[in-house]
Length: 361
Ligand SMILES: NC(=O)C1=CN([C@@H]2O[C@H](COP(=O)(O)OP(=O)(O)OC[C@H]3O[C@@H](n4cnc5c(N)ncnc54)[C@H](OP(=O)(O)O)[C@@H]3O)[C@@H](O)[C@H]2O)C=CC1
Ligand SMILES: O=CC(=O)O
Image (cartoon, rainbow, N blue to C red; front, side):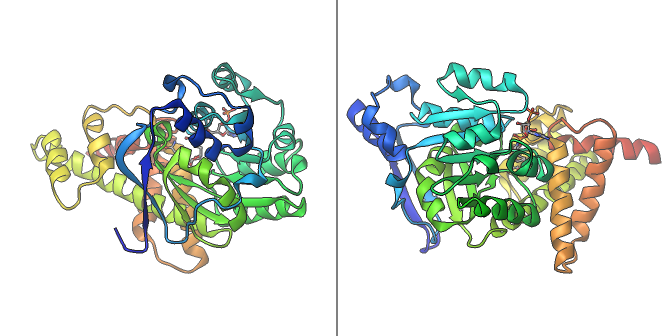
């Protein structure tokens, strides 16, 4: 670990008094009325852990927590948003949810969340509102559209957009939030469904530093590390670069699996060999065995990976950076989408290559 990174021990205790102290740190103003919950209702993260949370050099511990009441809004309850909202509720936060498809709110309401019927109403009733939406269009619509969150914002409130969007979208939402006198933080995440469930996401934040510090205790419930990257747009750009690499890696891995099989090798052995060498990656070890069996249980939908490649190519274009590998990968994901694989996991991109081989056989 570079010396500029601070390692923060994740030390918790099973005693309810300490659990209460932890919750009061995360959700300050609700602590006055907070009664310790049974241990089983706290997050599934181990309470006494040998692991360390890593914070970037730019990070500071929350210094102005008492400015917010701890009422948290959550907009967008898809694959990622649902477990994230759930973890906030389980940590004792007072959460208000909204989702376009209302039925996805029901499990969270059962856990204690309140429901409001529009993003505007959520924002109006919360101090901090998180948004986890599919793409730039939905992020703009939910924030700036009719009954959008912006209309419920005002001085003393904060909006944290966790969706993966492009720089222009993030800046646009920032402008609308700022026009209401509120604070804005972009905070896209690296990490998929399981890290979201386990509170092990990596936050790539940028925007209002004071909001970053204020919501850091909440980010620490949801994630294992957080980076503060400066001005709005830097978080979006970092996320797109990371996902551009990821999309190309998956396309290349798919080619390797298929080539190994065609030359008579066992692709399962290839996955094992890769896992032991310098090119090993958790993604390959996690997805490889099911890809070999042509199974693609959705954690990160293929349509979102293609969206991220498209946006990353736009980012590269904006600075005249050549990205031929990512451009080729993007074409492959587009083919996969045309085969109806949009809602499968992005590892299903291998199916596009299988089909291409048949075309040329
Ligand atoms: N899944 C993953 O592994 C990761 C995803 N991400 C990013 O996080 C974001 C969310 O991903 P994920 O949860 O997987 O996606 P999902 O497709 O599961 O969820 C998308 C969410 O956006 C909502 N939505 C879509 N279109 C609209 C619209 N027009 N108006 C209002 N709401 C809308 C959906 O509502 P409804 O339920 O009504 O459809 C749903 O709540 C994306 O930007 C993705 O790229 C980032 C890291 C990992
Ligand atoms: O955006 C997807 C991820 O796994 O990170």
